[in-house]
Structure formats: C-alpha cells, structure tokens
Amino acid sequence: MDRKIAENIYYIGMNDRTTHRFERLWSIRRGVSYNSYVVADEKTAVIDTVEASCAEAFCKNIEAATAGRPVDYLIVNHMEPDHSGSIATLRRRYPEMKIVGNAKTLQMITGYYGIEEGLMEVAEGDTLSLGKDSLTFYMAPMVHWPETMVTYSNNTKTLFAGDAFGCFGALDGGITDEHLLFEDYYDEMVRYYACIVGKYGAPVQKALQKLAPLEIKTIAPTHGPVWKRSIDKVVKVYDELSRYAAQRGVVVAYGSMYGNTASLCEEVACSLREQGVEKIKVYDLSSADISEVLRDIFLYRGLVIASPTYNNELFPPVRELLDSIAERTVKGRLFGFIGSYTWASAALKRCNEMAEKHKWEVLPCAIEQKQSRLSVSDHSIENFAKQFAEAL
Ligand code: FEO
Picture (cartoon, helix red, strand yellow):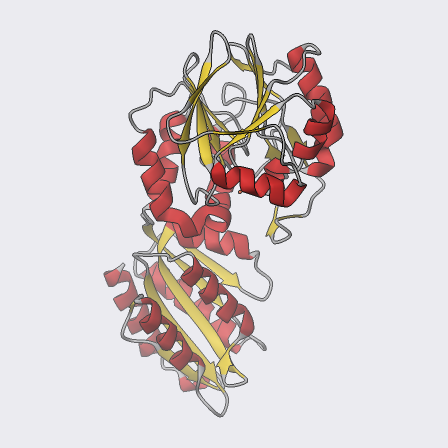
C-alpha cells in the first residue's frame, strides 16, 4: 500500500479491529485507527504514536518509512494513551530522539512514562526546521485534553490535527479520501464527535477560528481517513457539531420495564410522523447503543424522553442519558417529556428538575401515564405530537 500522503510524509498508523470498546466505553464495531505520521526530511520527525498494544508493528512501519534512519524528533500533539502509548517504546529504540511538546504535554510525559530527559518544549507559533520542511505548532486546548496542540507542515500545507476531524472506523483498504469515501465515514464521525469531543464545542470553535487563515491541503487526524478531497465537508461537520447545529428530526428515547411506556412511545413516534416529522429515531435505552443515541441527539433538534418512575427516581438508563446530555452541554434542543408511574409519580418531576437546572427548552404539554395506556387519551398523544412538531 502506498503510505505517502504528501511530499516526504508517510502514514505509519495502525488499524485496531480487536478492541471492543474505545476508552472501555464506546462500541467500535467498525474498529478504529490510531494514526501516526513520519516526516522524512533531512531530519526525521514522527507525529504522535499509537496505542501500546500496537507498538511493535508500529516500529516496523517507522523503519520502513525512514528507510532505517533514526528518528530525530517525536512530536506529541496529544497525550491520551491511544496516541501516547508507544512513546516509551520509541524512546528505548531511539535514545537520542528529542520529544517535542508544550509545557503541559511534557509534564504528562513525565507523569505517565517517567521520561525526564531529551524533552523539548515548544509554545504557540514556534517552528521546528527539518530541512526542506518545517513544522509550526498551534495550541488547541481541550480538543480534546488541555495539552492538545496541532502541528502544521509549512512545505506541504498538511495539518496534523490530533483528534480534531477524526472519526471511528478502521481504514478499509486505503489511507486518504482519494481511496476512502467521506460518506462511508460520516456516521462514525458524528458518533465519534458526540461521544469523545462533544463536551468541548467552544474550544473546537476557537481552534477552527485560529486555523482558518492557514492554507490546508491535507488534514491528517489521529483517527480515520486522511482528508484531501473532503476538507470542506469535514470542516463543515466539525463546525456544525461544535455549534450544536441541528436538523429537523426527533429522537424518542425511552426506558420501559414491562412495555407500557414503550408502546406509548411507539404511538407518539407515529403521531409525530403524521404531523410531518420525517426523521424519527426511536431507542429503548435498556438495549440501545448509547453512542448511537448521542450521535442522533447531536444531529436532530427534537428529543422526546420517556421514563418510568423507579425507586422514586428516573429509570436508571434514562437518568444516564440525561446526565450524558448535560455533561456535553448540548444546546438548542427541544425536549418533550413523558413520565409513567404505578402508585407515586416522580419521573416527570425529575425530568423537569433537570431541564430547569440545565436551562433546556421544554414543550409545556407533557404526557403522564398511570399504570397503563388506559390512563392516556388519544387526544393528549395527538396534541403532544402536534405541539412538538410545530415547535421543532
Ligand atoms: Fe484519540 Fe483524545 O485521543
């Protein structure tokens, strides 16, 4: 496979198709790639490493890309161990190699890997010459950790972007979007953003504004394809997601122990469709993949939440979802609440308490079901759907 992505720059990353859960949390049925790159100029620089389990094969990729030359510099854009996990291996293999990072990064390198020697500190706008090419560093704090920075190749106009513009999904038979389709990775990009970067909309916006003046011919992120042809599309996705922009559509997410709340939600979904809402996603939170629910919440403006009362609280998977939404400071969404109970009503109250706390926009006409559908009129379902569709 041709690993060259620009003049003197080679892809040396790894596909991971065996890990079940990224960060031990998020499903990755299509796998994930840990992207790393070599700039093989008069001096050689590796940009980021890979997860520790891939270190041995990763080193072989480096040797092939450098034709056996030693590595002069390791640039560390981001310290999360999916990218920093092979730093210690590289240091043992290339003891003269300088490890380049900002002050926060170097402190983390010492903290994680006990490395104190051969570190080189850089700051905003510093440039490192490699020969024909040179690398300039821009700080991008909280995209996705506080030490995060991006690195720009001045000769090739390549942006080594860290987690920004990345996505889930291993690389299926190519490296750049000259061989891989953006459309095949779109869902995985939104899901990745919603799960991993979703809390950091404001820092992503700041980074986008800072990088806007740069001429960029290639975006080389730490996950997913290298972008050359789809740069406008990828930047648009990240811009929209970080502004919490939403399409017209509704996620109906419910908990249901014995099916009463579930069947009510099926009716609400049908009624929303009758009211002209075209995009509707219904999820049973006891079995749904939470990462897919979050993905769709980042895509669509409407969110109908339905919960039974459980121990005088929300049903646990519903509470978990609402906490995840609050953590990500999701804005500009319309919430509609459905509560159910058998002898003491609490779920609807808890939903409204959360909405008040987080200043969520809530449809005033909630539905509350006592024991079964027998307690809910057809009219109240239709009215709920009608008002929700109008407010969407
Ligand atoms: Fe892919 Fe934040 O690490």
